Every structure is written in structure tokens, then in C-alpha cells.
Image (cartoon, rainbow, N blue to C red; front, side, top):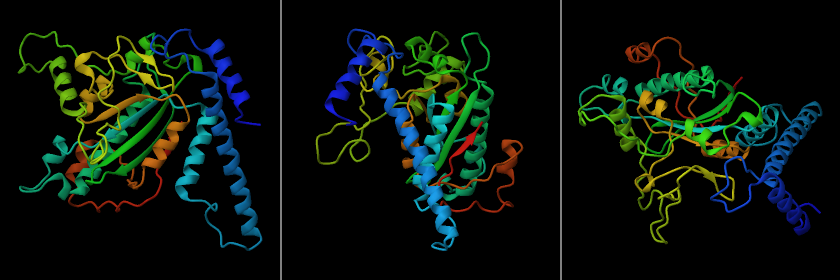
Length: 350
């Protein structure tokens, strides 16, 4: 019987003897994902693909029989999108990175086009156009491998990109992006040193001695991390108002000398004592886009469920062409963007 105690014991025993290093979870590297966890991810993707195919065949039969007036597959749009995205991971492999790209209301392109007395919340047309232009520029960087490099220095392009765009409660758009890097499963970043080349969870060290007024890259990166990538715990935000005050994001994080993996398969990034509240990021992206841009290692198909379930309000933004300045300069004469609708906007770029 699936899920029995004997099968679980056998699976855990195989994982412990074959695919995991010996020793505690602190001593294991990122390449030690258990066999049982990998099998559960594959089974989830296969069930999703089979269920979607069954529902589509049932929908087609109902339309032929005249039982339904056509349109749809008999399930909620968000549920169907989740199944389709999980099927994509079964075909092309699990995502490598999860990127959260958030609007910065203080972007220069937004502030320069506000009338005196206005804030970014008063002009969603400007905010949406600037965010959309920067999002497509970020997707271009991911596709062309302008930031992530392989060990030999060549561009590390993407095999696919899936993303959703939603509006936060305060009205600013943000995107969840799942990226699958090119290469086989063995080429994905698993060891601690490989992950550290892509993701950092530390305050950057500043070797420049010219003072805070210096406009060098080290000082600008340190200022960006302190401005956008430090988590501050607050009641009603990440902690409950009345119960025990424990951060649901699990900050502050534990101090680690090297990047490892916990028992659930999640990475534990290398941190010092002063880095316990730093949100993981990619330095090049943070310097270029000057906003909260969280980058996490994602190795299972469950990340698709998180991406789809979080996108409750999705903006049907049109793809734009041309330079960023053209989007902002013509905002007064261009038609207003459509209002947010609870539709899924995940797209796959191969």
C-alpha cells in the first residue's frame, strides 16, 4: 500500500545509504537531496499531467454530447494553470531559481514623471509601464545569460522561464519568476560553492577607503542591500498580533560558515553574525534594478504551486517594444492599462 510505514522506511533507508552524505544535516552539501524527495516531486508532476489530460478529454466529450456550452476545462483557471506548469517541469526539468521582483516606488523613471504633490500610488499607469519595461529587461537578461555565468565563464542561458505578475495590497506590482538554467541535472548548482557564485546572503565587504560618499560599486552594493534586502520583523506583517511572536519567514537566520542543506531539502546559506537578517540576492541584479529582488535556490516542482497560489491578482500587461524612456514619456497620451483581474499570467519562454 502506497504511503505505508514499511515503504517509507525502505525509501528513507535507500536515501540515507545512496544519495546522502554521512553525518549531520549541517555537514551535508547541497548535492545530497534525498531519493525519496526526488521521487515525490516526479510523482507530483506525473499526477498533474495525467489529471490535466483526463479533465480535457472529459471536457471535449461533454461538448460533443451537448452537456456543456463549450469553453473551459471544468476546473478553476488557477488550478488548471498549476497543473500545466507542473507538467512543464516534468518535461523540461524542475526550476533552478525562484526570483521575486518587486516595484520600487522611488525609481527615477517614476519620480520624474509625477506632478507636484503626487505619489506613485496616484499614478498606476506610470508605475505599470515602468515595472513592465524593467520586468522584460530582467527576462531578457535571464534568457541571454548576461549575469549568470558557467564555470568556464560562458553565458548561462535559460531553458525556460515561467512567471506571474500580481498587485500587492498597497497597489504596487511584483513578479514571481521560476527559471530553469540550461544543462542536465548534474550541471545544476548543488554544492555550496556553486550556489555562492549565484546567490549571496551576506552584507558585502567594502575594501574601498574613500568613505561613504564614494560612488564605487562596493559602496553602492552595500547601500542597496541595507535599503532593499534587510528583513525587519513586525507584528501583523510576519508575526501574529496576539500569539507567540515568531517570524513566519524564520528570521533571524542561523549563522553558517558555508552553504548547506537542511533535512527538508532547503538551502541554508552561508551567513555571519551580522548577516542573519539579509534576504538572499544576486549582486548584479540588485545593482542594476535598485529594488527588492529576492533570489532563492529552487530544486523541486513544488515551487510552481507556490508561484501560482500566490498570484491572486494578475496584471494583463501588454508587451512593450523600444526603450524605457518611450514608455514613460508617452504615458499621458497612451491608453490606461487594464485593471487587475484574477487571471493567471504565467508564461513559458523556451
